Picture 1: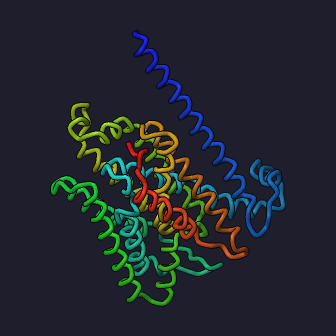
Picture 2 (picture 1 turned 180 degrees about the horizontal axis):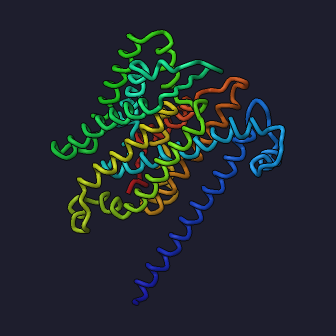
Picture 3 (picture 1 turned 60 degrees about the vertical axis):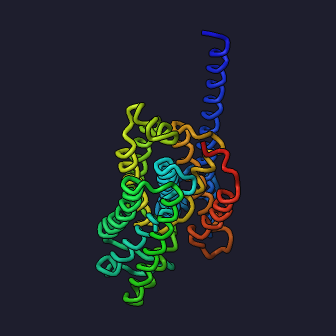
Length: 355
């Protein structure tokens, strides 16, 4: 091994260790944020009491922790991770830093699917309580959300595959798709009953007050499966970022990878939207924050994005409960405040961290 090669290998090992330490730090910060979420609310729970309750010891806070805050915090962790993963692979698939399920219209299409399901059937099971809604027919919501998110996905894939659209054109098309499905959602509300319209509006806010153990298991399942698959494909995304022809030379089929990635990202997004509503900008902001701290190598970027997204949503949920107590602000509003400056940075900045 020549001195130059040895130096390059040593430098890469140092960079890998640095990335591993960053990912480990994100994991520990998530644990701290998770515990803070369990302790924060109208009724303060001391940290030691929260830990004792989790360990199964008798406590005055059993109901608060096990029935309200624990499922809410767990849903925030895996919903944030799932949205961030969907954003990271969408950006890699279309090679555009502004691409995400939100900016490409997938979230809006999924939200319209949920709204349509409420009007056509799931709305019969809605009841209001504590300013929220409960839907017992989640199957209809998930299927409807997924089908319409797939519709938006296939429109984008068709443009990329058969029309040779540039990354900029794909994002502009996504914005048009977003406006289209937003208009269809408004059209659906116009013909809905008062109860259905109120439920649709609340649904589209994006709120963790709808979190439950059922929501957790569904979101946990799709997010963990997506993380495993996306991480296994990480070297393919690295090749895809450079050039389609270069990816083919490495044995990667760009068209198949894009289609599979976008369909799986749509499933993750649709599942989260059908349970929680539209939570904006996590899928856009989290991958870029991760990319700035660990780089663009997807073997590290994918787990880092998941952890950053989980941290963002858990911390946003804490903020939503602390800003105007006892009012709980929908977490989608908090994440939008975060996402707006990130989007401006992408538009006005030099985006040196992209490649």
